[in-house]
Amino acid sequence: MPTVTVQPEGVVVELREGETVLDGLHRAGYAYRIGCRRGGCGVCKVDLVAGDVEYRKPVADTVLPAAERGSGTCLTCRAVPTSDVCITLRNDRLRVIHPLLAFRPGSTSAGGTGTEN
Image (cartoon, rainbow, N blue to C red):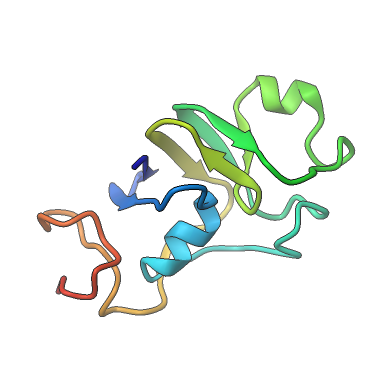
């Protein structure tokens, strides 16, 4: 299964098969600035530093134009990693929303099991 690493926090979360970046981070106890959650607003855009994603559901070209896709912009509510990915958030920090699930750097698990902390 692919992982998503969020820099500069260093948080690593293992994603489930077909899971979006946003859904995987939320399942693991993390949040950041989001909007519509359906690919129509662009609020959840991040910079894809490494790895590859695909879009299995429609994304409006007006929200994520080809030039942005090509330069490494990723729409996390729709992006499904096809490999391990590394992202940086734009104008936001990763927040813990469920401390019993959230992975902390230095832990031996990839998050989301509920046994960390």
